[in-house]
Length: 414
Image (cartoon, rainbow, N blue to C red):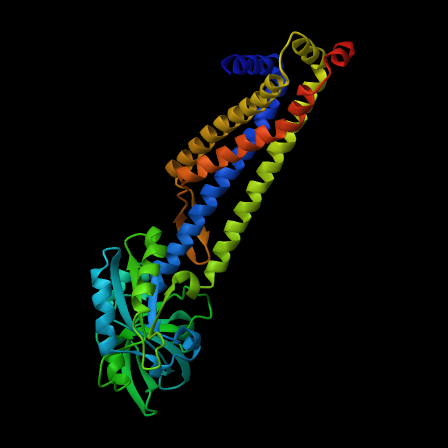
């Protein structure tokens, strides 16, 4: 086998120009794919972080059926105090859960004493919320960020603040209907103007849990959802399965599940964009396969055609068809290995340079975001194996043709 490798390497050196051109094509394909994977992965990870760390959290727990009715923000589907006790006991035992925040979500009328509009409200505990979604404070466009909220204060979404001409320190009134149908109003002071991460149509404001319970006249502790932050996004699937299995054991009187668990992917429409990025990566890999396959097949077909007399000679002196087949397959393997090695080296060096130079870009109203491309070892290995495998596969037909040539016919070829 070692002799076959030496012969294959010698043959590639004999046709150096063709070898270098083919390796350059393979290198270009590998570099394109690895850089696209690293940059798109960085962009995807950054956007996922913006979504999960400033609004949603990684996981959310609701009462069964709440999410399907979330557009109406139903107060009659809140989690009760007894149910919360069971859930928090489970969450506190899970080491993969870094923090969690309890929220009451409801709709209200927002009035500046001259005009009135509707608003969606998230009632939170500021300390819990900042641990669960640490980037929430960065969404405050105007106003004090420290501590997030004090009693009697509200964070107003930018759209409503502009439309109602509300500024920091203004007094407003919230009017809400509780689940029993009674209406109550309560004054609040504008603490800050909040950028909506869900787009210009966002109408989500924030108040404290205690203020929401007073406004809604809640006699007992009730929560609409529990947002969960994990120690790492790689824990998403295992923790989701653990919670889903554990919470599915709680049944109501009709023997149906009481709770439901959802990942951020289920809740956020951004997940569709993330899937599109993954789909684009898949098609880029297919293009790489096509480039390598065509390049290797072209080179090996030409190699067989130009070396017919040589093939006839080595066959005539007793070289078996299997060894001739192995020789040409090895040449294809070495071409793929050479192009892949150079491509991986250039890609890793380029990624390192991009991280050192800290390329910044703007995304919507977010400015100065730093691109930090990274690539997993698994992606590098997978792309390398695909390229080398396709290089060998592309050599198969020419190698098979060479190994099955009749020595006499090959020696007569001019």
